[in-house]
Image (cartoon, rainbow, N blue to C red; front, side, top):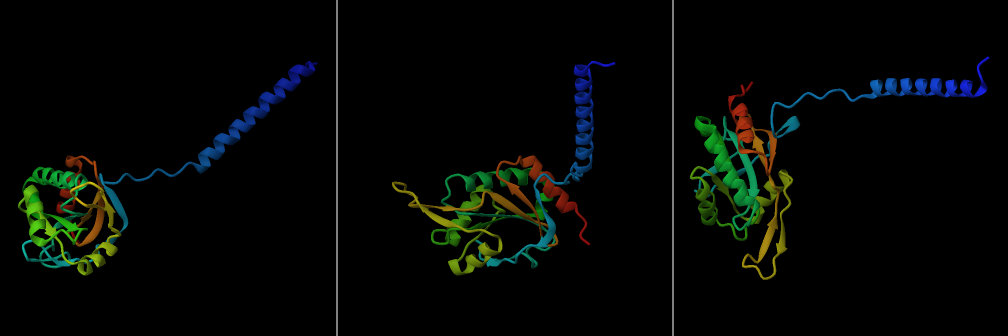
Length: 214
């Protein structure tokens, strides 16, 4: 006859084994399904949606139509910023210049566009001087508050003035630290956040340039 103490110990061991087996079964049944890895480095839009229209005059006085002849068949890199920005904007445009260089011959099929969030200071002339200081092909778009506000809303951009006491700037403007990417068919496809390596961005853009449009 098995001593009482040994019988109790055996019962505990069996109970733990049953519980552990049940836990393993539950975890197997409830394990999340593996996710399909994205083909892109940037964050993707799921589902893909058409980019809100933009029809405004660029810094050279030309019509920029996101869904028109000026952009059709090209990938558009769209950034919202302002010329007095002390950090994010110059960093982003310098990054875009590096990306453009990495694109090589494919750069002819990519448009780099900066839309102002500071119409009070960003005149067309000032916007032109700013973007062309980084690259002569970059496109700057500005206008009146009435012209820009609908574009901001469409792209979920909500600029806000922030007073900077003692600064020559007078005020700063809050804006996104990321870039939208619109494909050749005019669809929003990617978001590239500040800090993503230039070669990764270039790889994404090349994929979209080479993508077959149905």
